[in-house]
Length: 392
Image (spheres, rainbow, N blue to C red):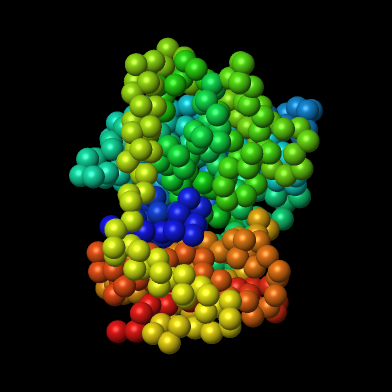
């Protein structure tokens, strides 16, 4: 049993086991760093790209333009997924190549594909292999031609984007990539950021209408899009001053399956009910009390005497434009993970030296396994993050 209290809804990066290289958001944000340490570095894909005619949308004006991007198949190949590469090059794939430009960024929906067993990296959920998947490829670049920062650069992640599918007729804030169990992988090549979405197959909603949205930030921004409850249409908020590209995904409506769609939604509801936190038992109450004492000590400028800092986890993180700072840690045989510091919530007074708990977790070992994530605000606006545990 695992508990995450302070940011259980927002902290998407807190596995206590070795992260999955394909879906774990923490690792996905750093896909290129992993590539540099793996065989991918030895077999990098040449910078050969395909020229594609696209539609460039600037505000409400549409003009013809051309851009050079990796194809979806090449993106899949970049991830060492030959099966997915072939799927993207097959007759069932949907080629889009539509570009929209907002807030200084040019976003292109390259294409999508779905089906059973079309990837070498399938997801296992409670012992069941989820072999029916949906994939979409997106390219993001700066409109002025300035290269997007490589994942090894300090500036990487300062401009965050939330890329997600949406379903016509369903609220976008309730039905998106995260709520539908999706994930993504990402890398930067030739100054262009490429993102590959991976999630359960949503082709069953083709008759309703599907969208792919790319908006600023790490999570869904309720200001980015407008939802018409009467018609079910999702549209861009024209007054939004950041990125909020929205593409219609041109799937064949005949591929829609109302019965499968209803089963999909019912499954989502059941999973949401299963995720309801159980009532706290004696162990939970003990840990909750310990953490509350720990928090009280931080407010008084002290650390609990029975808490020790895990020195290998100490790191300095630079907040991104959306006010979040991400961190990762590796505890060797004890697992690895990470999290997010929400600056406004953790340090409302912006006082340097302030300390705040940005999350904690434990397993069946109770206090012995408790890990408390602590962030300290620095003079230069960065945060130092470290994990603490009860002294052993």
